[in-house]
Image 1: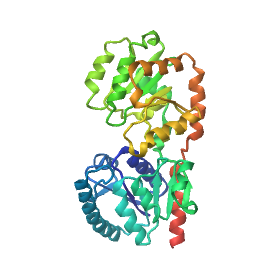
Image 2: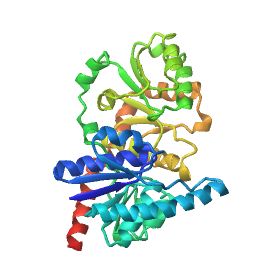
Image 3: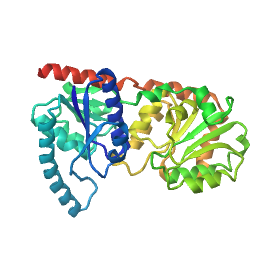
Image 4: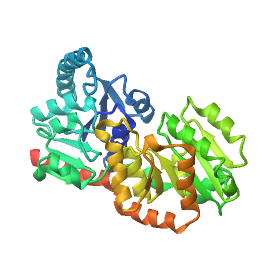
Length: 366
């Protein structure tokens, strides 16, 4: 099977694409998978480490840009349409997946116009501009939330969930406790700010430490800071008597998840998909500048079912975060209740469902 996976720009778009590629490779070991992205997107750094092929196109972002930048974006789009046509002709894919972001637009559009089966993935409740347009052309749309169906044609829209990396499900708590030099009977708090970190969360968590001192013997912490904030966050932890592991980036995320009892993080689509597939309790702090405010919408869906607690970014500080943590620590059944509710949202087999749709489309064409 020859496959193109187009899109990226952010981890929220790219990582579901990588998860889908891993599922495809597992089922079709001889498949040829090529990613399409841009040199400015996160895919430029991540994909080369995965072993998959990566081809760059010239397209640039449009939403939220100045008038001059929008003109440049249209110019780059025209150029990338020509590039996409050549890529499609050269690779002759059996199917093309669009995982979101402006890099997905020209490839999926050209593939659709060329009568090649196409599937777009929409990880958020409200689709972005690229997917809203592509939804009119794509053979199928794979959505994460039921509410999203109103933006697409019902007869070609499927509720699949967001693909997650299978390794995420393979963690071992006992192994993780040894890896992080932790204790079995403590509550483990995992703080994530995304791959680049989140200064607002880093600042709030370090401020929260003084309020959490009464719990120093009952909690242990893993904190991913991002590269830029690592040194000063580590220094702050050294001022307090906590059992903590501080990292600029957590490469052993599988084990970090497996030992975590409570996760504090942003509410990006990929993170939410992983948390719910694992059934993790969480305090979500949505990134306030996400397109269409989709992170807050993601978090509020979980909150409505008791699967998480929520702090808006504008309200975040150390005292408020500490109060949320303490409230959970003082009532341990809260974590169990959150875990059950979180798991009810999880769709660990999303990748397999999307591949089944792809297989059906390919058979139909043949």
